[in-house]
Length: 286
Image (cartoon, rainbow, N blue to C red; front, side):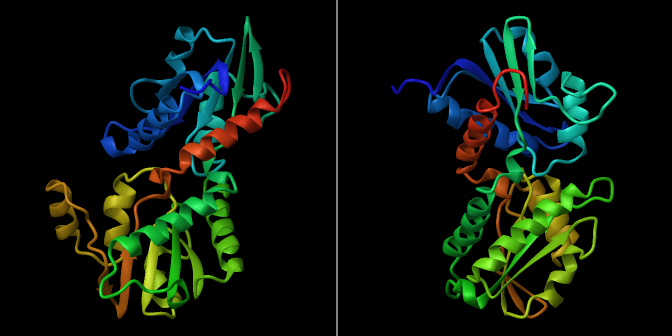
């Protein structure tokens, strides 16, 4: 077994979590298990804001000299940059913002930037788009230049960063000119997800949810907004089936629907990059 890259450090991988849907926690456990398998750290722990084990309760059990806290979130939004840092004591008192590096007794704690804003997420998104078409090449796998790529994000008026990261991905991929067109659409902001049919000028369309988990937004809300019957979606959910059949023809388009970008295996590498970035910050600034 190779020597750990961070033999004196623990990694705490933080997710939102929910008691309403077990799929929400899956990416945290998935990527934590992979990093544990790689023997990168002295210890790897999973923690959540909304379910057990709560991230705020993990620290007393960690006795490594250094602890990296890596938020598995898409954007620098409300929970990632305000709620969780405040709860963990990383908020700058009276000044706002985050003090990402702290010394507490004999430990140095570092609060990494969110995984979803790392430039490598573009590769993960493209892998999701390619993968779903290759997995379901019916009647044949269309070429990217015959296909419109739709990046579906959450969006929220409470924090503009939620949409910025999705739009940035669409701009970067569009500039590569591999797809016929690339558009960002949202659950809660304009342009809304159903507008993808009018935005796409090609018959082939691949929709990739820019979400961390295959939770209810990805498995239920978006398929319904793409035109699948709510009754059918709920029936498939109850039966443990995929809620979208690839490809499905809707409104004259042949639509492939991928899994969330957060479950792409390469995210373990992105998490490591965020930790390496935090490692470079030194002991008292960040």
